Amino acid sequence: MTPRIGSVSLHSPVVMAPMAGMTDTAFRRLVKRQGGCGLVVTEMVSSEGLVRGIDRTLEYAEYTEEERPVSIQIFGGDPSKMADAAQIVEGMGADIVDINMGCPVPKIAKHHAGCSLMREPSHAASIISAMAKAVKIPVTVKMRAGWNEHDINAPLLARMAQDAGAAAVAVHGRTAAQSYSGESDWTLIAQVAAGVSIPVFGSGDCVEPDQIVARLRESSVAGVLVGRGALRNPWIFRQATDAAMGRVPMAVPIEARGQFLLDYMDLLIDERLSEASGFRHTAPGQREGPPPEARGRERWVINKLRALGSWYTKGLDGGAQLRVAINSARSIPELREIIERFFVSHEIVLAGR
Image 1 (cartoon, helix red, strand yellow):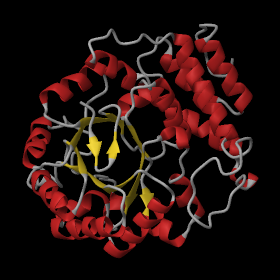
Image 2: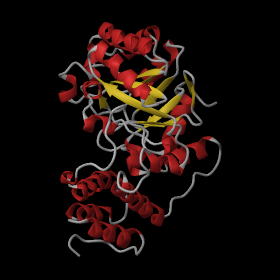
Image 3: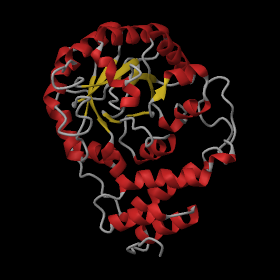
């Protein structure tokens, strides 16, 4: 059975989680092309930046038609500004607007946003209510188990979110204090799912297709969010869907893994230079066209490949040497050559050679 979030139907219960600095529109597009992903969520976007019309913030919220259905995740602590930001998201044509109540990073939490909102459930509920009243698209909430081991309140907050108008919630089974250490508590996630009537999506420690299938079958959740597992294996959504349907999960040739990196690099390079004008959904009043060259496009592309490569190369024979070579690349042609030599020519790549 495929889940629904308000009026939005998902063709698969496996969802790509938002990851700051990683799940940009280029990566999301490529993941969707591999199949099996029912929903993509953008990197978290500042409500303050959206309301003020800051270009960099607006870029995080951009998406393309092939990514649909798409959820734009926003963060903030002011109910009025969050409602205004939700209206901007709705105006951009997004299918869903998601509230980040799960980010444990101190620079987010200290501004009474992210997971710090779990320490103030009534205030969190007021944000959800303000947003749900401001827009017609579904409002969802991403949360954690709680602030720390002494304050596990996801079941309570999920009920309050439902009462405030949320169409679905996603729960990462670790506390903010844990960050990404320890294990995700799927027993707690199942408890959350049992306590509300809206869909609950579980998150945490789903890095292999069989883990996703097991959680779908055992935890009474409507779906599963996959984050780090997708960075290592963008085909995980398709493979999990195959396994859930009783099919043998698709095998991914090493050449296909290399082509994914090359395609990702090309999409990053061409994002605003060769695509048709208006190919993305942008906020009203946002400028179009290529960004200033002063941004250092080549350096930006290389850094994006370095960030993805730190995850993508794990578990590959020669992966450690490949990471070093990617991190040592000084130009896009050099980076392309490194990828082609490793994945196409099957050479063990050494930095500087």
